Length: 618
Image 1 (cartoon, rainbow, N blue to C red):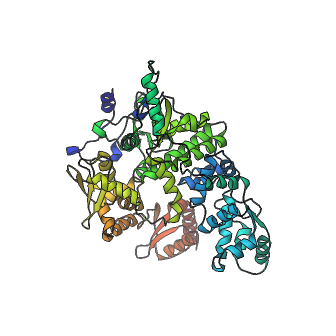
Image 2: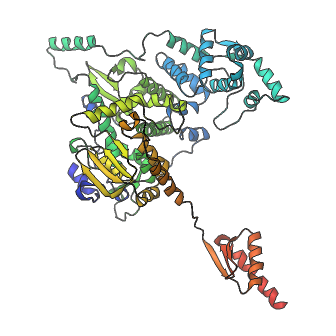
Image 3: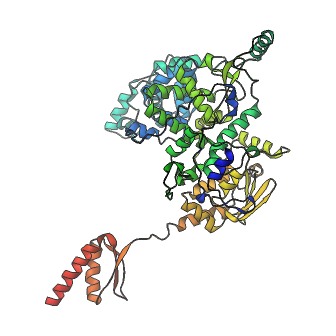
């Protein structure tokens, strides 16, 4: 059946196993639904909770539209209303305290705001703003104190008595006036603000007290070795065969393989690569294919003219090409974001579901990779267990039956997604360096006797040659988006490309930007370049890519109407009228030609007829 599916698709043509233009690749829709995670084979399969896109989608309100453009988890939280955030803080332990601590660590709160919040927690939760600003903060930092208070109030940490909280993109006269040192009304508002009380919300205060008094760093009790031994002993003594067999806990290596295979099934489907671990990458399920279409990463072939629309193949969109060049955390967050938006539109209690999903995702960031947690003990609600199964389809969790119960094991993807979001605002957006952990894991992959297919280490040379250490055709297809595929050369564990003007411009035509190309080369740069302090991309290469990008905007094409004037007098009169009407694109005095914007050429023609008639009468 897999062979029939592969033969049904329109495969790329590439000599010697090399890449070919990704824009010509089309994928057929899977004829059967594939149970993707082999890891969860021991648990009972369930239908996907991801609804298919409806033809008549409800109109988004401004709040939902703002949430749908969030680029990270904590930016999503920052755009929620303080009332919703307080509802999350009020969740029973461990979810509420874990979320409160994660928000306090994140970039949503400034460093000064963290100090103020922690001091208020330990000082009763209430203080005069004047005493707080003048007694706790140095005089050189008092201007930033009102910004810190505003962020605390907008995140539902302070009661809305100060009137500083604003929606994203809005201005607040009270906050801006409080931050200025001018006289007049601003000074009066600042004085009134200094006399008010800064009060912690009850939900956040109780959640932080619980978090600070907890001895365990994990949000849920982990599956202990004693529990596993007790179950094995009871199973050995029992003569009855269990209805649903259990398996041994997965190792960290198995978790990495499971995550990579789950995610690669989507990425390989996007680029149309038939590569995989031992050549066996399953096609995504029908629900996942519909999901890819909903988030506009793929679309039906617009050139298909067959009688049966169900047989129309899918092709990657320009948004899909942009998605391929993003880092792993950004790719995963796009899926999670669309999942939250989809469930919010189709779920009757969207606020309750959103609170459940967000709290569960943030708790995963505090878990340990390789440790398991029982779902029946830690996820009592049905909606939480459904979220667990859906996150398992994204590769965030490994769901299986251990010690006679359903358990979930967080993967690196889930932990890194939350950790990267916490640190997103503490570094400049132009900082493209990798974390130490990511570099170390890449070094381990390169030093292994048989390198895995998941690693990618790129070296860009000053002669525009790109050397990539990889064994994956997925990486080859991704590099082929902006590299010259005619220069493709391959050795067992390394491939060679060249960057050319035509290859970069072809990537631009697909919707890829110069910044995305440079970021991809920076993120996947070889660890040896970072260790020796060298430039990750040579200056002449990065400058040339930016210059090729600017070539597209050097000349602007405009549709015009050309008018040949009879003499210099007509050229001067018509040119002056067209210039006054903002219709003149260009004029050549030596040939008496005028170039008029096409949208306004009818009015100019009318004026020319009137002008010539007037000249004949005179």
